[in-house]
Image (cartoon, rainbow, N blue to C red; front, side, top):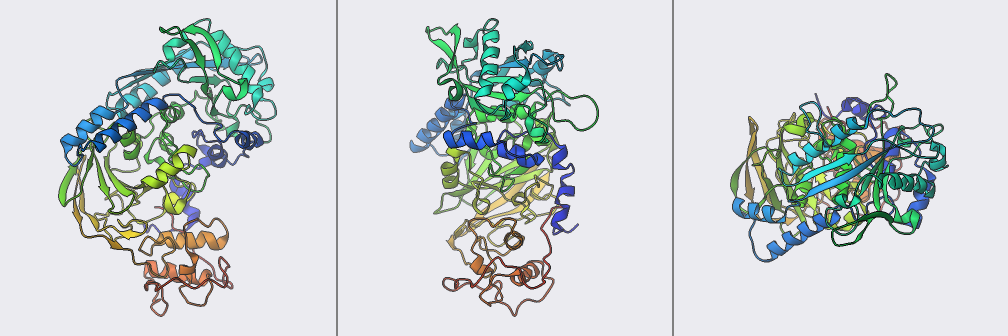
Amino acid sequence: MNRFHRLALVVAALGTPLAARQAHGQDIIRQAKDRGVKVPDAYYAQKAKDPNAFEFRRAWKSSLRRAKQKRAAMRASGISTTTAAGAAAVQRATAVSGMTFKVPVLPIMFANTPARPYDYSILQNKLFGAGSATQETVTHVYDEMSRGALTLTGTVLPWIRVSGNDTQYEGTNNGLGSNLAPLLTETLDSADKTINFADYDSDGDGFVDFVAFVQPEYGAECGPTSTNKNIWSHRYYLDAYLGGPYLTKDFNAQGKQIKISDYVIQPAVNCPTGAGSPTPIDMGVFAHEFGHAFGLPDLYATNGKNEGIGEWGLMSSGNWNIPSSPSHMEAWSKMEMGWAPVVTVARDTSITLTPNESNGGTIIRIDIPGTSEYFLLENRQKVGSDIALHGTGLLIFHVDSNTVNSGWPTNAIQNTTAHKGLDLVEADGGAGMDIEGYRGGPGDIFPGSSGATSFTPTTAPNTNGYSITSGISITNIVQSGQNVSFNVSFAPPGTLTIRWGDLNGDGTISMADYKSAYNCLIGASCSTGLDLSRGDVDGDGRFTATDALIIHSYVLGTVDVSRFRVGQPVSGAPAPLASSAAKGSGVSLPEGPAKP
């Protein structure tokens, strides 16, 4: 099936409409967009007062910081990662590893909750049990992703009944204000009588790493806005409401009084689907949140502009694949956590990769000379928790470390669609991840459903950087069993030739350029980083639907457009447009591209 279908087919391609899926991301704007629910005004009010609102402050972030510092020090000392032995040495020495991370989970019943939603032991098994082929657990998924480097576990307490009704804590802002504080402190007061909170301070800093609260009702993010006044799921820190951390009655071995600051609150049950009894909350949402506890950012656009890397990674939408068996973290997150060796390739070679889900899997890094950009390559297979992947083979990411580093502190590394920090290279040449709602398909991976076996400076997609030709070629990509082999070769990099119709400036004219033109012209969105003046391919001084149709025909090769300047090099700076983003007279634009 041709991948250039009408955009209206995107939802059908997803298999399950977004509105029917569970709202599993923790970013509040993302939750609202997924289910068509209005973002509470309290969210914006709190963010205006505190730009760091609805994020963790401490949690396990120090573990990732130490790992990154060690890695930088080892590289500065001259240790090479161009060999498997060197990469493995760096990985072993700098991994987030060797510790047991424990989480207290406190299920809550309001005064007006008629009965507990289910026995607390069900949640204990879902989160921290041994798991099975049909039901993963957070403990097992993190053991699998880290290759046994760490233990992530926790304790789910019996249900704690508080003194107030649900409306008392929800207030008029879905629990996103100070009215939530009495609920959390009363629950902590009760739990403090039965557990030693010092057991949940993994780094000995005197703070519980974080507390997970579970409220007994659907989350407000399930909607509808007009009637659902429940608590909106979120993460935050108690200091914002209490003026400081919560003080427990427990002390650590050094005599420090244990404090509590970071927390996350989740619903006990999944969003209603219209049939049957409520089902216990899936573990995928907790697996995603625990990644944030280590300090990893969201890998979707937190401003809602694109899907980031979709369901190919846990820190994007990977917990949506199968909520009981979320996707692994992708190559970049595993590299940051030190959970897989990363071999840097800088000369011609042939490579065979085993699955990255297995203990022997390796990540390949290829730097684009003279830039802050590089590619990460990994072999992904339907193994373990990755059983629900959209396809198998070679997955390639285009990373810009400058964009990552600048966007990480504000959890915004994917927010510029035309220049993401971590861009999935879609093997079939589409731009699906730039479309809201598309989260992955078999054409994203090499060779995949499109049969793509090469990734070079002249293919679509291509290996060029954002402003330079890379000279990098990855060819003869073949999957044999669960292994993937390919060749890597290098030619001298050069200056990128920019051509008429190349709106995003990547050196090629593709459906990504047409999709950008289409969105601008219909007023849906006009991504930053686009140069619309290069879209004036008919040379009339304007950017109109006629230009978009010419670009569309050029890419598909369906109509002879050689009389126009589309595809010709741009000499000098294009003249300013007389007008732009204005539809042509009665010209109907084909929607697309969509995925098969």
